[in-house]
Amino acid sequence: MKVYAFIAALSVASAAEMCLNNTLYTDKMCTQKKSGERQYALDLCYATEKFHLDNESGVVWELHYEAAGSCASLTKKEKMSMNNCTYDVYIDGYTKNHLEPCVSPVDPFPPCDSASNRTACKSHFGGFCSWCESSDGAHQLCFNKAHLPDTKTWSCHKTIDTEFV
Image 1 (tube, one colour):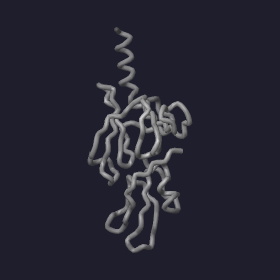
Image 2: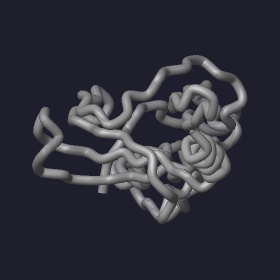
Image 3: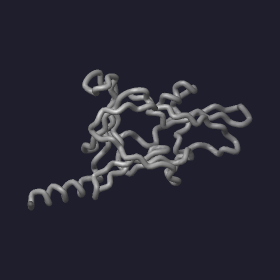
């Protein structure tokens, strides 16, 4: 009994160092052709989503927020499927999620300005960037979705684009 209590306490204490790993497969059994993996830090805003581990239940939640990008206004909460092969419509592929210690989590604020055209911006850093055009037509730039420019003077494309590397 003491061993179980120690393991539970250790799990809760180390939750801050855990990351959600999302692995992409091309086959529906998630056994072959692994073509990409992303690691997301828990409770960190990634443009319009955040992943949260409920320590009491052990459930991992995917929290969706309005497109403004600051994770301020929750629009949807979904229980994540863990260690199961599931089809993801956004990436048109199969994924498997699991928790493991953080090694190199995805940067929530990637330097999107290094993308020089709409196509590069669309696929840059796992879809965390958005191509924007100034209202006067003089500028076209790639911005991090968490830090979009003023909508009075800029128009940004609001598509969900996720690419795995």
